Amino acid sequence: DQSDAAVVINFIMFCPLVTLTFLWALVNIKLVNGITSCSGQVEVFRDSQWGTVFDDGWDLSDAAVVCRQMGCGDAIEAIGGAYFGQSAGEIFMGNVNCFGNETMVSDCEFRRWGMHDHSKDAGFLLLSFVWRLASLRLINGHDSCSGRVEVLYNGIWGTVCDDGWDLTDAAAVCREMGCWDVIEAKSAAHFGQGSGPVWISDLQCSDTDSRLRDCKSSGWGRGSCGHEKDAGVICKGECKPFNSIQCSLCKTEMTVYVFYDHNVRLVSSTNPCYGRVEVLRAGQWGTVCDDGWDASDAAVVCKQLGCGTVLEVKSAAYFGMGSGKVWMNNVNCFGNEPTLMSCSYNATPNICGHEKDAGIICGCKCHTHFSE
Image 1 (spheres, rainbow, N blue to C red):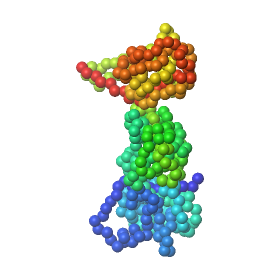
Image 2 (cartoon, one colour; image 1 turned 180 degrees about the horizontal axis):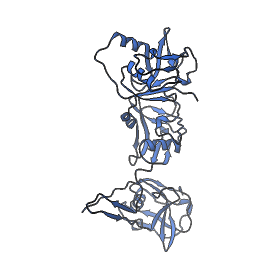
Image 3 (cartoon, rainbow, N blue to C red; image 1 turned 90 degrees about the horizontal axis):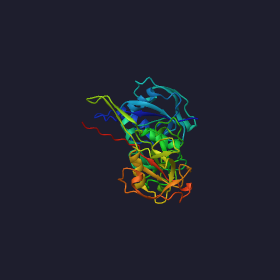
Image 4 (cartoon, rainbow, N blue to C red; image 1 turned 45 degrees about the vertical axis):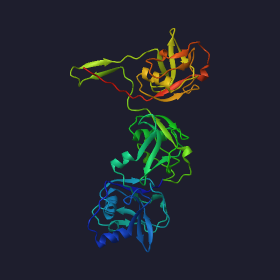
């Protein structure tokens, strides 16, 4: 596929002295559809009209010249991928070959004036490391690794449409947020409706995309979604349950063993902190009915298993139907009980069928405190 090129600028530099040459340079080159005046698709002025730059051969040296010409500081990265969309009109420059020390991009070697294929227009983007960290956030979630996905564009926070939103897209968000792997991709404004623009729709991320901006999409602000379709995500969090801690930095080196109540477990998932709830009774594992099953009940199980806070309460055999007895029904916890068995419940077996097996998703946030 053909793609547009872009570059990343580290900082914006404002010069106290502006020469006529610099003013002429600004007139003959501009950036469009960018986040700031120092970002966007590169367009050059020739024969009384604006045209674009073909991205074949577009690299960091070429980008550095544009950054310098625009008074925008140093280039960090040259980016491809039609990031700012395709333009109309002619393509005036192609195969740009700068050494990096030129004053203007027109001083560099280039060819292919007057082409008409805009699928490879060049651009550059102001995306320092700090901006990347601030350009994505999760809102209204249970912790920092869950919530409505929001992105920053043109200085305005907006949401992501759930059209095409799937686990692969959500996984890219989890990776960018430093939140391990994805648990669920949520749709239909699961974490509430956002405000402002819906910036992205029809995302197509791959398993190797580490940032949302690396994924293909329909472009910034080009979808027709409303906020009732805001996308969300639940990521696994930052730690996993443990059986022991090796304290090599303590005054006295020691190993602390953590024992969980083995009368409850979560099954039918890839992580021990989410799954179908099963309890051990009379030497036999059985399930819990979802009648009355709520966040307070789930919170006790999460705490009992050392899995932190509850993220979601699942019902209707979300993690598949179990087997054996349905040991608990109408569980009623306050949330501060030490174990699920400490809560009130109906112990009559098999009132429910397994199609109503209860499940949970915990946050897996481990907080351990030691004192002498």
